[in-house]
Length: 387
Image (tube, rainbow, N blue to C red; front, side):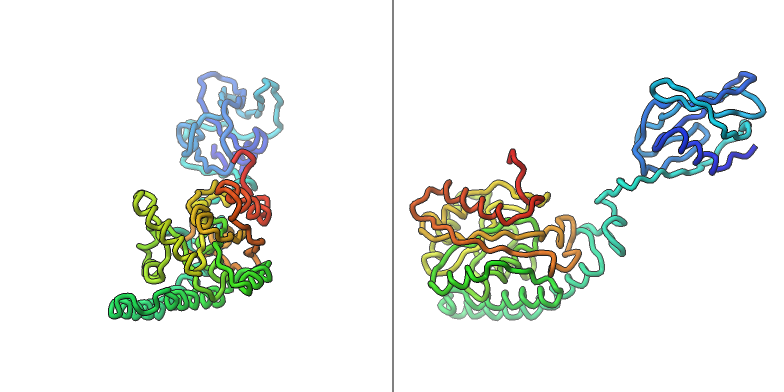
């Protein structure tokens, strides 16, 4: 007789959620059907009944062993892992020696929400080799590229001027910083990604006193760079970045022409050179911006700090202004090519009181700055107790 898929589905509900079974034919004349669970299969995995039984394409196939003997009508008895057996009133016709061809049943679980699936990342989301994209991410990317074209032209003109004057023009490299800041502000405004900034009165007072310092923040998204830029404002500042960013189109050109401090962590001489360069900028009254974790946190939680940034400030005696950047990883996760959503109303930057480096060791300075940043972070961004 014919085996209906609905009967198979009913069997699943009786035998237990997320289980698989194998039908083993028997040559005896009477039928007693027993389901013996031997392995539990995770829910949400598609399984198919083939001529060899019920199998999973994602792991071990044997979950329940079903043995049968022949009668005109079979009673279904379910036996649990504790060997308790209960009979079922649900009956289905005796299957003849026919091959059951790829009847598919899928067990779904509300807890099965894999973050690696495009369907679970929102409507119209798809994956590329550079990361996930959705309509907003495409809009953000196109906006950044279109704004980047005039930015590139201005940077090229600056490059020509520096070459003609042998770097005598704009020695503090203010012009590239100014136009880079315009690009960043317009991009955030046009994409509704401008963050909320708390504690701006602290910076207003800091600037009115004519002080120069180092801005230090946590880092878990590409959005942290423009967020820090708009927080510092229309000032001449230099970003301490890894040398790999110099390879990014347009951005790499802006970093090189703007006099930003690029660190090659594989070259000891380069590290010493950048240390001296950063210290000189601070002495010349130019602010420095740094992410002391050295890389983006993929989990969102604060990583251990590297001491390079603190060494610069400590040797010059410059104060450090801690910044807590909240939820930038939600707007632009690490596996996305561009931000997946607007940052306005989601992300914010909290400015903390400046921490003086004079009279403290580098270790004390780093600990105070780290604690200040942690105070402004939500629980899911704070480091775990053992970190």
